[in-house]
Image 1 (tube, rainbow, N blue to C red):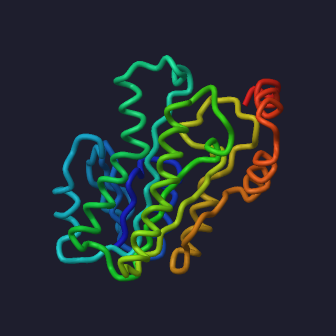
Image 2 (cartoon, rainbow, N blue to C red):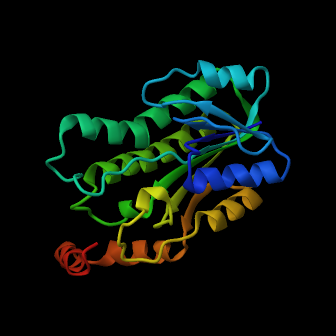
Amino acid sequence: MNLIIGGSSGLGNSLANCFAEDGKTIIVSRRNAKNTKENIVHIRLDINTDNLDCLYDKIKKNELSNIFFTVGLIDWKNDDIFLDTKKFEEIFQTNFLSIKKIISELIKTGKLNSNCLICFCSSASTILPRHRQITYCAAKSALNSFYKSLRAYLYIYGYKYRVANLILGYMNTEMNKNINLPFKKKNPEIIAKQLFKKRKTLEGIHYFPKYWLLIKLIVNFLPEKILFKMIKTLNL
């Protein structure tokens, strides 16, 4: 059995379709549940407020083979250093704290099979210093750090789960709709097909598209003030 947290649209929805078209059963959490393809089981789940009882009802005695956390929340207009506390908490909780809570509980309750894939979705926006979308980037940076800690914990304590972290560039999704971005938006269906194909061996950090790894390497060698000027000039 397989699970996607955050499958309303975008990458999560595209991944769900890949599993369903291959005849695999996939549980997809979303705030507004609706059934589509035969093998897709939708559950209403607000990860910030709901417990996991509805998920356990669907899993029952089965074990999970793949878990993808494709959930995300961003405020393109207001997320700067003056963002109000309530909105800050919602963005940070959605992009990190609730993800940590869910995976910790699933491991603790033994709902994963021995070779289960745990796949997080981070963001290429964590590569650059940010003067906008500050909370979103802070949450994704926390997720990056948690990914490393989880990998270390599982190895040291003898777990065989595979953990992957996707550093995703800009995608053509509802979250980025009508937003002018400095790089071309990637089709989530293309990334979903690549992930589905690699799911049995996937682990470690992966950049989509791969040029973000090159950008990261360049950024690491740039003096801070030059980097700030570049961000201002390019309106990143």
